[in-house]
Length: 294
Length: 298
Image (cartoon, rainbow over all chains, first blue to last red; front, side, top):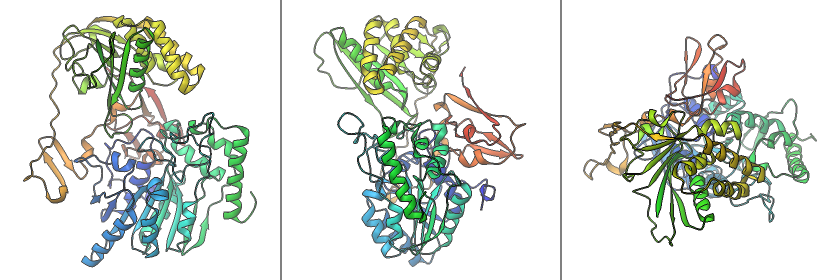
């Protein structure tokens, strides 16, 4: 599966949405929807995508679409999926949640749906903070990032804690399919999406989604940042089936984390010690996932 | 008392402009308040901000409905809404545009000041953030505050947020705009059709509020209806594709957040009705066939 295999005229997420220029979320959603196809039911909890994808009565979605509360994406996609099963209809049920709705607010409903192995796809588009409400830190925000609730200044140097490894938490649920993805690797991105569609049971897809507004970066550099995140090891691409990692991507050349954080306003205040601390965290994660020192 | 209404787009800094203006007026011994008004939209959507200045304490807390001055940070806004709405008879409008005041067409002839704040911002700051340059134009056009107070307010307000050097650069942008502002009278006669809204009564509303695609007097509503929301007027830079160089690899087609690039005869084509000018296509093109060019709207 590659870019050229995608249908050209099928668009289930139309232009005219109101995402900020350079937002990665519509890139993720539009291309995934080309693979999920027209027999898809979409659910979104509170997130940017909910707002920019439609403000009643206007909508970018061209498939049945619903929104409930912030915390229950897992339960809602489970309910929709079971209702269609009862009716004997074969559909793909997808929930698109942000990192806040996954790491923090939605984790109990998500964990429950995963544990019951509901037949649905859960997509977390991870922009590493609550961007919709004005850039507040979430469990996903990396160490040192300046957000409106962890403003870098005299008292604190940005967020004090490291990013929670949500994909690993989902892998521990031993569900049929877990994949971490990046828009900077289109072939990998599309193949994982296709595999998720074709798998039965609970599937968890996790995509890093650079946010020019919240990361205070150049909108044109969105894909470049997604690429650098993988190359430096801040973001790791792998697939896991029933808890076992079956496929893991290793960057040909590992770049220092400093190259990734440069150009992002949220890291502008970084001292050499802070860069070192972030590099230490990345190297530990690298060793854990690849089973060898970087 | 005098009141100012700012029209801008999310991310252009209309709110900061309104606040910095209030600070400049305050530094000259006035009372001043300012606040923004916007919906749930993202960057790029129209945003309003207000400033009130008085010698007395200000008790009124409402939005500004009858402004003495209207400030337009983005000239595309004068095409889609009547920015003069409620403007006082002898009021004045200050617009960021490359045009002369006499070339600007509005709903009626009014006192009008123009300045090319976007070019000034690009020259001095390297970014199309026009909120500080426009402050210089307001000082020049209205004479209500001195340019020195504006510079001081900018250094204080923006310097605290972006660092001292950035504060000074922004003050410089204001000073240049102050010197380049043109004052005259606009043309009138431009007609605006008020945008209709879909307001169904209880009997017309579908069960659960769920709708398919519906053609109404107010245009499309429901599934896929955002297609009628043209986001092309958000951009400052536009991508230009060199057809000779384009190899039809579809990378830009894949990466366009708007999904507004299509492939015709194996070459990429941009639909400028939706393009927000983010520049991802130009940055990712493997053969550098796409160039981002400053767009000047006429």
